[in-house]
Image (tube, rainbow, N blue to C red; front, top):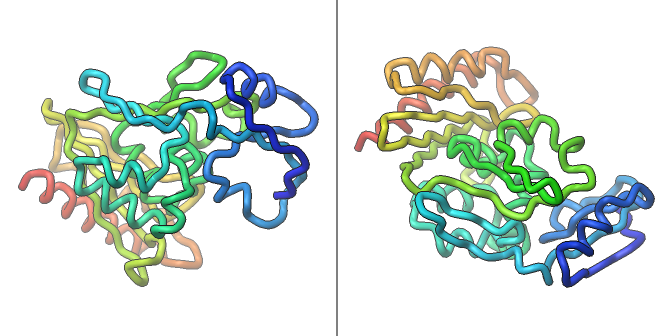
Length: 251
């Protein structure tokens, strides 16, 4: 995108005032990995580096991630091996040094392992100035509308879950053709998200009957055909990966 204005406010109120302008279109700037893509309309940017939005905090049974927390910092601090695998698969080391948690979610398409994992974990985002928490599954399909004039300040995920992640790709460094992220709560609740296709990852299963997990995964990708894979292949692999995730959780 062509950046025509650059702002680096030191107060959250200043940043929000800039983002709520109608002209020029003004967007938050975290790591800049998405805004630095070629093409697009001229925009003004609000650099978030001075707002203190890069902290990671434990709040009871939840982990609060500042919107500007770098992926590499999260990788170094997470206690979840599966989440570490997800982050490594999402971006290379150099990109992880720049990319932020919120920016990665906002820019994610259906092939994003990070967005799939956070969907499985039932992540929520805190929006300002609304002071509103919105589920990631509700935000992603409508992010262009929901984020206009607003700023994500933190993302919250549960600490009392186990996460499993499996994927199939052409090479280990490629984005997945199919990926599955499964979160399990102590109550027996399971949430399965699938990635590798479409505009956003999809929630394929949310319940306690593990026997239905593989069939739910297959149904969710029944029509998932594109230039990378047929629907039949994705349907079969979704069931396989869901089963592997469940085995990892139960182990």
